[in-house]
Length: 119
Image 1 (cartoon, rainbow, N blue to C red):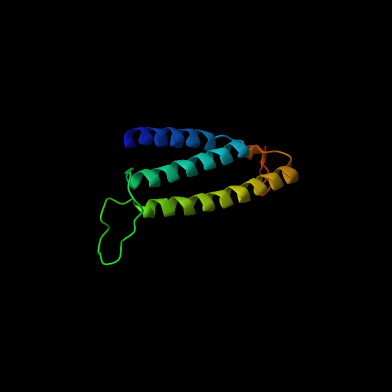
Image 2: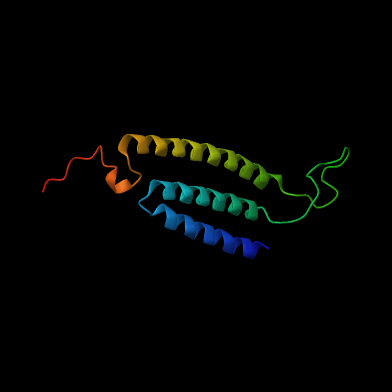
């Protein structure tokens, strides 16, 4: 299962880089979300895909009696999902505000702070 998910992660990263290289700000945001999902999937896969019981240790024992699931990658992915959603919401509002101010989402035309070209 891990090799298949590794291929999927590679496809997601390639698609996100393709989208992030576009000159449209909305395509960049969609690429950012794809990259975030690929990173979350990579963290999840790095924790090994094993079926196991919850990592609980019964009273009187030092270790769990059976194979347990690794809770750390799950916690990291859950935190990354929340942070990624917050970042996306902020970037989306920023893009809407930029569109209302500048009238475009093309990054080549968003040169308000740069000096005018002389020619």
